[in-house]
Image 1 (cartoon, rainbow, N blue to C red):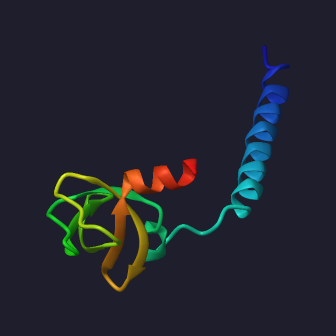
Image 2 (image 1 turned 45 degrees about the vertical axis):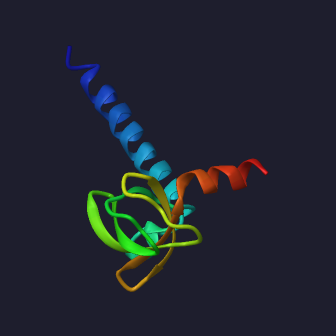
Amino acid sequence: LAGWVVPAAALLATIVAGTSIWLAISNRARPVATGIEALIGRTGVATSDLAPRGTVRVDHEVWSAVAVGEPIGAGEDVQVVHVEGVTLWVQPLQAEMEESHD
């Protein structure tokens, strides 16, 4: 019974260490996504009409926002394209999807 415990524990420790090293190396390649700049590209919902100023909810937080281009109605899905201070510049989510299909 005791003859297999040590090799099994060593194998388990090797697997855990190998996985930890692999995750650390793979995460180094990712760009840092912290701070307010991490909001660029995120999607949310307009909580008021943006004509051009209003508010949006992104990541469960309400932000002051400015519509890029045409006005955006309350309840429309938006995507953050720029951040300045505590104000988000947003565009309708459909506009981003249409641009990617062109």
